[in-house]
Length: 478
Image (cartoon, rainbow, N blue to C red):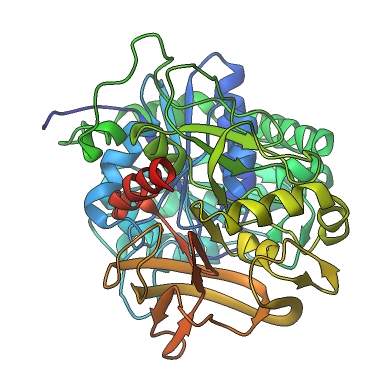
């Protein structure tokens, strides 16, 4: 299937991390939405936290665009899938504009995604320690790659009216439009900890206030009409939107079922509907302790015939009725170890489900939850392993191959993944490991036992959608 679809769009980039991309991107999403536009929020790379703020700002599910995990050929189709029915899309970049996967050139960088989307770039510049030099900086980024169109800049952390005049004069001589000027405003700051910003689901009302402050600052400091005009100048994309049912060759969706991306509540849980005609129930962990997930995973499970039901391991003492399979994604169980441990009825229910041979897919935080202990607190005890916090950050993309047949994949299946944690699990792998990885060292990693597949590796199933079909089939037959 091929077609041509046009969605007004902007990519928000920066010369480096810490320049204010999240403030500007989230503020733009909220400011556009407040003006009645349907806004599609996107994030470059494997970040799970920023999309939560994007969802709060726009009222739609935040989606990731990762050319490394998903492949460059899927970036535009996934973008169009998320942007269905929207008036404008805002894409927040990652790190510095040209920073991509280590050793892979431009792959998965903001610049790479901007080219794949044929989208204009708005460069957010931290101007706090410069004046005329800003012109040289912006000129370098605008001219480095002729295929990347830098439409203009937003100046962040500007100190005074005089400072603003100097910056504007410098950029005027360079011929680069200034779409906005933002002063340093304390209430826009969002708290951080060992893996970045504190997720929306943990801050609740404070997160709402932060997003409102971002929207107000951006609305007051930026020329929104000019930015909308820049976005509308992006042409059509020569591809069709990604569709979970289509890639799985599934039957057409139930006409009585709502179409499009499922909405999220402010705490990050997907709104689900239940139907007597649904297939096996797949329980998906959510709530403040398990906020890391890709929306497409639930969509693939649904397209494969499952009924996806979200539950909160902090508060729900039982798995959803009829649970035939369990997915526990990433998050911060180390922050909630005591509360997770205190929910003994659920820990026992998860252990019993795993013992029965039902499919269980656990990534990172899910892996920790399945261990015997996490920092001395009893967990589900499914795996013969213990987990603890460390001072060392493990971070980066990984090439992996499945080394054991599991509920997700047959041995030999190759996938790309991402690690992002400050914990260790001892031992690192079970008798039957989940993956063999090469970076940062050659090693076996994760656990496969009965129906359980548990690993530190975050994967994006759209790159290998057969894993969702295999998982649901195992739910039917286990």
